[in-house]
Image 1 (cartoon, rainbow, N blue to C red):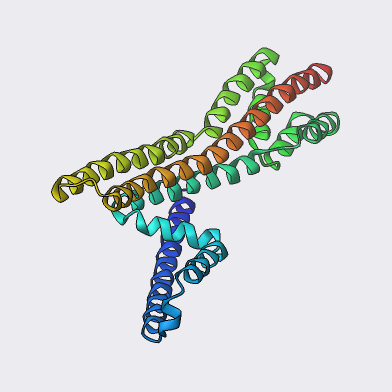
Image 2: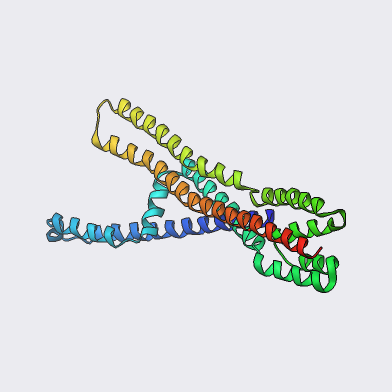
Amino acid sequence: MKKLIVLFTVLGLFTFGINNAIFAQEDQVTDHSADTAQVEKTPAEASAPVAQLTSEADDVSSQSMHFVLKDKFIQGGAIWMAPILVCLILGLAFAIERIFYLNLSSTNSAKLLEKIEDALKRGGVAKAKQVCADTKGALAGVFYEGLDRYDEGLESVEKAVESYGGVQMGKLETNLSWIGLFLALGPSLGFLGTVIGMVFAFDDIERAGDISPTIVAGGMKVALLTTVFGLITAIILQVFYNYILSKIDSIVNDMEDATIGFMDILIKNK
């Protein structure tokens, strides 16, 4: 699973680097085209500011959301945006790893109980243990530990099932603390970047000796972009985090219900 997390991290950083390179090339081409168009302007074109503003508005509205987000991300600055991006990539890597693990841990409890009951009737405990060993999932492991102590009595089986069930629940919640860390760290870094950006904006005002709307708007825009992307990171990770929690609750509830049915089967076939 650690190798999987590292793979997702490397792929994410590699993809981000390629996108930035492509975006930089697009900017160079766009700037060159704009310069050429400026040189070739006629006096008649220069006297039409309203038409130019309308054309620019149409260009902005036609840009895709991906292009806009990438543009705003670069405007925010690499110093504060890079840690937020790392939080998003690592948080998603841990979340995807947990989703894969939980899906592999899920078992059709009703079907498994039927197989165990049929195996107990035909081949006894050894056959039932083989069924559990051949079935993937946390529930099958719990039942195997209970059947392994079948000769010691039903009380020992019940204690083994409860103990090993607790162990399996702990494994289901592995790495959730890391997802929660990156979930909280993303917006925190965004707020920190905003506060520091506001301090820099006030420094610019102090150096200029005048409250210029251009200075204030430019500094505040860059400062607030870190908060925007920090909140976007938190929203994305929150969705994955809640999905994982609901998946864990579903597996745990299914394990508890199946355990009751498992003990009933052992009592009937004792």
